[in-house]
Amino acid sequence: MTDVGIGLSGLATLIALIAVRVPIGIALIGVSFGGLWMLMGPRVAWGSLSIIPYEFTSSWILSSIPMFLFLGFISYHTQLTRGMFNAARIWLSSLPGGLAIASIFGSAGFAAVSGSSIACSAAMGRIAIPEMMKHHYHPELATGTVAVAGTIGALIPPSIILILYGVIAQISISALFLGGVVAGLLTALGYVIVVLVRVGLNPELAPDRDASVPLSEKLLALRETWPILLIMIGIFGGLFGGVFTPTEAGAVGASLACLVAIVSGQMTFTRFLTAARETLMTTAALLIIAIGASLLTRFLALSGAGDFLSSGILSIATSPILLMIGIVCVYLLMGMFLEPIGAMLLTLPIILPVVDASGWSLLWFGIVLTKLLEIGMITPPIGMNVFVIKSVVGDLVKTSAIFRGVVWFIVMDLVLVAILCAFPQLVLWLPELLS
Image (tube, rainbow, N blue to C red; front, side, top):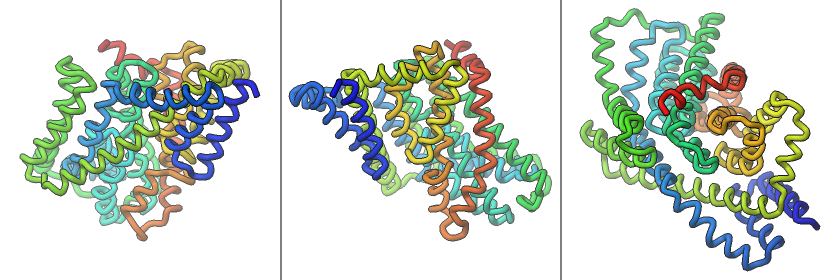
């Protein structure tokens, strides 16, 4: 068997292992190790297994991941985000579907301190869905809105997906964050339009609208947003003002979250310990997958399978439009079965050379890729955000009803992907302006 044949056989084995539900990190490491053994012998295989994990995890930039995760978990467990939703509810409740719109903006606010789609959905689900159900919102609208609003967490910085992508693609994390701000705000706006259109066509979806709230009560509600606003100002002000780097921003944000939680009286030792435990578990899972992806990259490079597949993709796609349509279809399909970070790390060794050879901006592609991966968080049969919401509502709403509730938003997501592909400058102008 040729070297390329070994590489392609390894990829086929990897797909088979994932199909039978072997954890993706274990599958990546096992196939890469076995492939390197077949290609170069046991010494190279064991050497790669001992060197590559250290080389990858010793990256200083990666230290921001546990810090941003800890920031999100602290904010979630100490309920620092509740005031953001309450303020949005009071200001927007007189609009058609106002509570659903409030949950979208509340999710955008939580996204600015979380970086996790799942954490965003879990937090807003516990806060927003009971409020909407109390106001007789249709369960599909209530649950579907919160499920999709959670996907904003991967676009608005700090984003764990963007950090990992930046490390692998070797581009500026700050520039990715700036590009993600625009895409995240466009996504939030698109979701608001969906809610307004749906409720406009069928007012029974959101029958209860609060009367006009006095301005004094609205201003009073803004006082509840100070915990998240303080953390956001601290992170983004220091980050884009050049006071500290994106790597240091995670530690600053986590420290601020702990301080704010203590001052607001929400911090307890149990909550701190729970947040720390979840941070360690999530970080370990992410790094195992990332190490496996690094080993796969080395295996594909040595076998020549990576170049073979990249060249094949470029030769088949006779135009940039066809190539982009193919990439979109691949990620939408993968998103139905794999979690986003695993899907990204599995495919980047093959896709990045194609993107680079096509002359596309790696920064722009990172934002589009993140958007595509997050669509997978709400598509059946896996749809992790949908199952997070299902765990929140229990038997009150069927899983199928939640999936029906996200259909309109998936259509809007595809429209947004088309817009970002047709007008790359929407993503690039802010990073270029502030570079």
